[in-house]
Length: 280
Ligand SMILES: [Zn+2]
Image 1 (cartoon, rainbow, N blue to C red):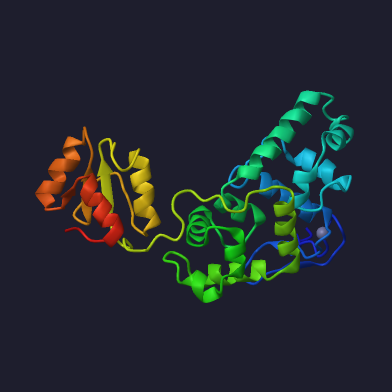
Image 2: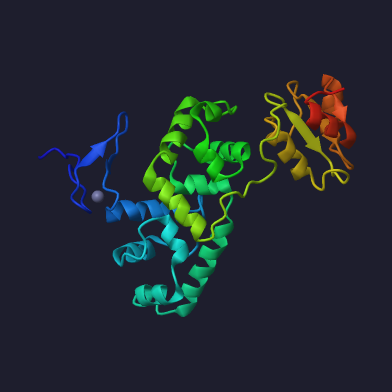
C-alpha cells in the first residue's frame, strides 16, 4: 500500500503548506486563502470567542465565496440586503437573516478577553486573555505594550508575551482591529477593575455568606480579590490567607477557619485587605 503523506499544497488555494516547529499540523501562509479566512472567521464567531449565533460554517463559506467578508472586521459591515442575497438560496427564511444581524450587533459589546481569543493571538487562552485585558484595559494599550510589560504579569510567560507582541506588530492584524473599531466594536470592555495593584498574588481569600455593604454581591468581592492577583476558592484550607464572612455565612467554613487559625474578616476588614493586601 502507498504510505499516506501530508499534503504539500493547500487544497483551497494551491499555496505551499508550511509546518511550524514542533507542530504536527501544516498550515497555509496565504492571507487571501479562502479556507484560511473561513477558519479564522469561524473561530472568531465560536462560543469561546465572540459567540455569534447563526454564523455557522456554511454561512461563513458563502460570505467568503461572495467576497463580502475578508476578515472578522467585515462581519460588522454586513447589510441585511447583502445577507438576503447570499443566504436566500440556503435559507429563504428572512427571520434567520434578522437574527444573524442581531447576533452580530450584540457581539459589538463583547468582552475584551473574548475578542483577543477571537482574533487568534497564538498561545492565548481564556485565563491569560483575561489577565491581559485586566492589566491593560483596552486593545490599544495591549498593542502598544512592550514584551517586558506583558511578561511582568503574574501568570503570563515569555512565550505568550512574544506572541502578543508579534500579533500586534503585524500590519494585517492592526488593520483588522482598526476595521473592528470603525465598525463600532467595543475594544475596551473588561470585567472588574483594570490594572488593580497586584497585592494579593499567591494569596487565597475565601468569601462566604451574603455581602450587602460595600460590595453588592459575593461575586463582586471575589472579582476584586482576583483582580489583585489573588485566588478566591470555594473552601477553606490551611493555605487560606483569610475568610471573609457576610450574613448567613457557611458554618463549615467558619469552623474550619477557626480550627486552622485562618483570620476571619468582616466587610470592613475586607476593604482594608483590598487596599493594603494585609490582614490587620
Ligand atoms: Zn490556502
